[in-house]
Amino acid sequence: MQLELVSTTKCFEGEQRVYKHHSKVLDCDMTFGVFLPTAAVEDKTECPVLYFLSGLTCTHENFVQKSGFQQTATKHGVIVVNPDTSPRGVELPGQDDAYDFGSGAGFYVDATEKPWSKHYKMYSYVTQELPELINANFPTLPGKRGIFGHSMGGHGALICALKNPGLYQSVSAFAPIANPSECPWGQKAFAGYLGTNKADWQLWDATSLVSKYASTPQELFIDQGSADNFLTGKQLLPENLLAAAAGNDHIQTIFKQREGYDHSYFYIATFVAEHIEYHAKLLKA
View 1 (cartoon, rainbow, N blue to C red):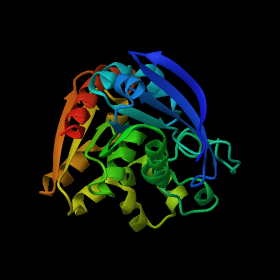
View 2: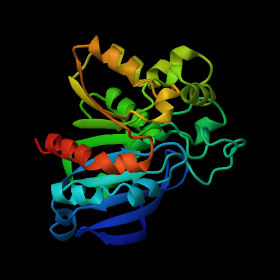
View 3: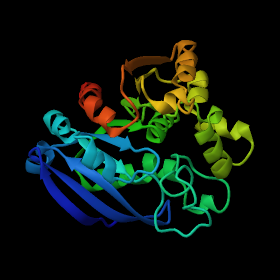
View 4: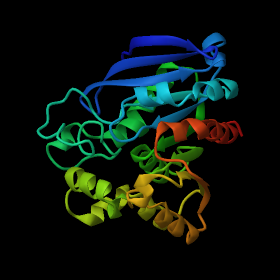
């Protein structure tokens, strides 16, 4: 699978690169960022890989330019990959009508409803096609993969880990949409992508997956700002996920509420180093 290098920029003695490629899963061209730490650039040392999934309206650029993750990633020798949030360059009716559905709002599910099912398979892209591409082209350490994300991407990170026990050695989430079946954002997206049968939604809902999880013990690091307007607006519902986890011995949670922080990249930038350090410890164990 051919990669086209769009840009490369030196950053904290590593390299922040952007690539483009044609996705067979999504049937369109996709762009993603990959940060290579010093060890991967200079010595081609095999490094663990950490995937970051962004939230509504974002592209690959937001996390790359606003979070400042690169300093901690190069310190701990972690490759960080961040895909886009939806298929791009496809012509589907209504794809650009709203910020919370269609372009920039793929919700990391595999759509089953037409016309979305032709392209909107972000779950398979993130868990299968993209990692295969990364492993084939960069010095990755086999079996050492972590995932984290923000908001819609936090939801994505959680479901990717919960639906694939053992695939990720670490998982964390900033202000995740933790119970999408019960919030306006999730209900709109799930109805559009998955249909109106709410039983089908449960397969893509982190709270539901946590309640039924019965495989390899999994720790979830959940991070939430107390001044997040989407928390008070009942779009995130972390309390539902935490309650489900409390009743399941196979799930352990770390929950950190950040007093006074909102939903923005200022919040992410403040705590992203802590998250990368958390992942690095588990990925290098």
